[in-house]
Every structure is written in C-alpha cells, then in structure tokens.
Length: 326
Image (cartoon, rainbow, N blue to C red; front, side, top):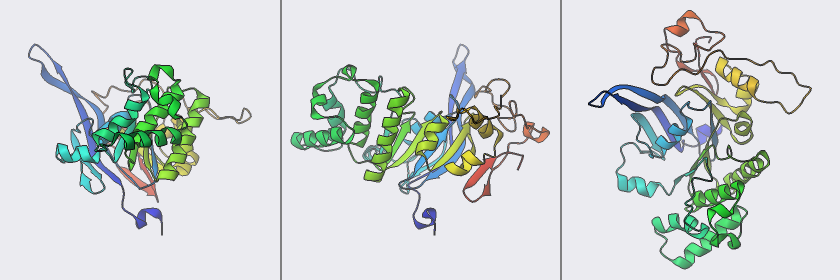
C-alpha cells in the first residue's frame, strides 16, 4: 500500500485563482486583470516536500501566499487538515498560523533591521501565547542551536550577519511554534552556491527531525530535484506537469518541462545535452493566449493548441500533464 492510500493530504488546493485588477481612465474603472494564478490544483501529503518550479512571474510565489492567506484568492478552495481556509473566520485563521509558516526569499529584507535576533525569534512565541519570558528565552536558545547558531548571536542585529546566517535566523523564526507546513519561497536564490547547499541540507535535516511538510518554490531545477519528492511545473499561472521527481527529470512529457531541463547545467563536462531554445517571450498574464498558454513558444504546437485549452490529465500513476500531444 502506498503512502497516499495510508493517510489524508495535509493540504489540498483546488481550482485556485488569483487575479489582480487593472484599472484605468479618469474614474479608475477595471479595464482588465492580471491572471497571476489560474486554475491551480494539487495536494501535499504529511512529511512530503512538494516542489513548484517555473520561470520568474509564473505565479509560484503568489500561489504560496494565497495558501497562507497573505493574499486572498479570487476563486478556488484551500483545505488544510480538512479546514477550508478561504472561508475561515480571521480569529481562527490567526490560530492556524502556528501550523503554517513561510521562509522568505530575501534574507536581507525579511528580518526587521531594528530588532535584535532575540526579539525576531521570540516575537512569534509571544504572539501565539507563550507568556513566560524564561520559556521564550529557553526556546530561542534551542532554536538557534538547531539552525547552527549560538546564544552569542542573540544580541546582534541582522546587518551584522552574512546572507546564510540571516536565512538561518529566518528558518529559526519559522520553526518557533512547531509548524506542520512551511512554505519555502525561493529560500536559497539570494545565497552563494556553497551556502545554498548548507541551507538545503539544514532544511532536509529539519524535515526529518521534526516531521515537517514543505512546499518548496524555486526556479532552479537542480535545487528542486535535490530536496523535493514531487514536482509541479508552472507556466503563466497554470501547472503544466506534475510528477514524482525521478519521473519528471528522467522522462518529462510537456515541451516546456523538456525545455527547462535542457537549460539546466550538467556537472559532467563530457555529457552533451541538446539545448531546446524557446522562441519569443513569455506572454503577458494580463492577456494570455487562447488555447494552451505555451503554444506561442512551443516547438511542437499544433492547430488545436491555438484553440482549445488542454485538460490536466493523468498519464500514468502519479504523473499528470496538460498537453494536446497526449
């Protein structure tokens, strides 16, 4: 019996949409909408790392922020442990935030420069009801040690740390209240390659130690492959392919996934890989093409691709794709 049959998903996203209104004219009326996220559906199992990959502007980060209700979705359903987040009262959502945290992309901007590390890490504990200052300090010491820092760092300000150390502080803050789900929004993209490996290994160790569940958002395919169990590929606000990482990387079905993988560098200089060059630019999400959103750049596009939007369908066990080729 596989894992999905044994337990229910921790998170279910169905038909998620997030549109931003475009206003113009003297009266500021709505004249259009940017479809940042358009009909996205997936589920995440407890203890899983679910990767979301795609070019900049494809809607990855917006999807993550909608899940946490940092942005209100335009449509769709988001269920966390069976609770519908889109209709939940604000006070109940506030309590649920203990179980849902985020690690932000920029470790330079996500920490308050006026607060010492001690306050940055203990503030979430105070917000969620840990009244004892002694308990908060003990928890802060524990968290700093978990992420590879020490109490010596607690009295310092964010500007006194390197990028990797700041991201460790951000991870400690996210872990403060023992969350079940952490959304990692490009957590290593602003770091040096050597530091990226340290942070990825730390996240992997924390997942196993504390039975965490991650949604890992990135544009670097090698990073996603290293840490994820399943990977969803997004293009212009939609998921075009979803599969276990080994299936996706060894046998990509969608032409966009093939192009992304062909552009990823290979560490072996003797391995030759045929590069797929996509023509043109990514269309504007305010006026996406009819039919398949990728057809304007797809080397395998057919007439039906220009007219009819492909259905996101199951190709084989655990492998889904939205493409008229199949």
